[in-house]
Length: 415
Ligand code: CAO
Image 1 (cartoon, protein in one colour):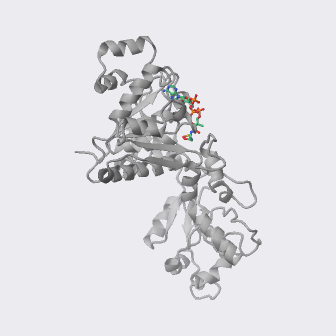
Image 2 (cartoon, rainbow, N blue to C red):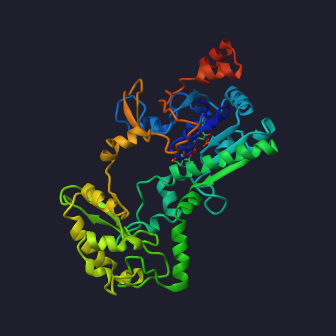
Image 3 (cartoon, protein in one colour):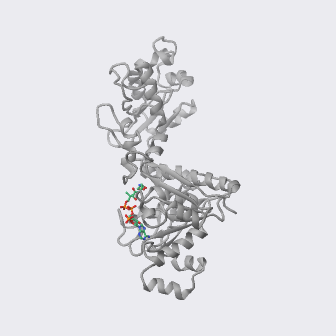
C-alpha cells in the first residue's frame, strides 16, 4: 500500500519532544525522515529517564519511530557541506533548537532558500515574536504561559500543569499540520516557506474555551456552570474549574465502588439535558423529572454540587465499568477514569494499533502509542526507533558520497 507522504524527504533536526512528535507523525504518513544528531551523544533524550542500562530510553524510542538516524557535526566545515547537500535534496527541514541556533550554525532562512528555494523550514519555538522570543522553553513553561496552568486545578489550590503534553506534543501536532499545508501550497507556488509553531500559541489554541470564558466573565460577571457558582464570588479572571465539564453540559468526576483503595475508581458523569429523565430514573430520583427546582438546566445550575453528590451516592454502589454498562444503555455520556496500566492492557486499543508493541535490539519489547490518526489508504506500520547513527553510511551514500570520503569523515569525527 502506498503512503500519503511517500516521496517526501524530511531533514529532521529535532530533539527532545515537540519536534520529534511532529516528524514521527510525518514518518508514519510515509515521509523519509532523516534525523541528524550529534556524534557520540545524539538527542539528549536517548540517555534521559533510562529504565534499561545503556539502551535508548523509552522517552527517545517512543518519539522517534520510523526514522533513520545519521550523526553529523554541523559546526565542522565538512559537516556543514554534508548538511548543505541534505538541504538541497530534502523537501522540509524541521527544527526545534533554541532561538537563533540554526542561524549561528550558518543556516539562516536566506541561506537555506538560496540552496533550495523549494525547501520548507519548519520550527518549534517557545514563543512567537515579542518579549520572550529568545527564551528556551520546556513543556510546563508553555502550559503556564499559554493559559493552561491558570485554568487547571482546584479553586483553593495553586495553578496546575496537566499530564497531557500539550506544550510539546501539542505543538508538534500543530507544526505537522503547517508542514503538510505548506507542501500542498508548494504544489501551486513552487516555493518553500517558513512555518512556525510557538508553544505558547499552540497551548492557547488548545485552551481557547478559557479565552471564551474570560470574555463571558468580562461581560456578565458570572459563569453559572463553574463550581464557584453560586457560593463564591468571581474575580476578574477565569478561575480554576476543578473537574467541571467546561462545556454547555455540566459534568463531574464521581467516586465509584472501590474508591477507598483504588485511586482510579472514578467515573466522569455528564448530566446532558436530553437524558436528564433517564438519569433521574437510573439513580432513583424520578421526582426530579417534574420538580421545578430540577426539571430544567437553568434550575439545576445553582444546585449542581448537591445534584452530583446525589448521583455519586448511586455511582459509589457500582464499579466504574458496571456504571458504564448501565449508563450507556440510556445514552448517558460518561467515561471511566482509566489508569495507564488499564490502557496498556486494553485489547481494543491494541487491535486498532493505537497501542503497539515494538521490538528493539538493545532494550527488547516495549509498548508505544501508535498513530492516533487512521487513514483508509495510508496505513501506519510502527517500526522501531533508529540507533544513534545507524543509517549514516546508507544516507551519505544515497546523497552521492563515496565510501572513501565517508571513511574520511568518520576518521575526522565529522560523522
Ligand atoms: N552538530 C553540532 N552542533 C549541534 C548539532 C549537531 N548535529 N545539533 C545541535 N547542535 C548545537 C546547536 O547548534 C546549539 O549550539 P549553539 O547554542 O552554540 O548555537 C546547541 O547544539 C544546543 O542547542 P539548543 O540550545 O537548542 O539545546 P539546549 O539543550 O540547550 O536547549 C531546548 C533545549 C529544548 C530548551 C531548546 O532547544 C529550545 O528552547 N527549543 C525550542 C523550544 C522547544 O522545542 N522546546 C521543547 C523542548 S521539549 O520538546
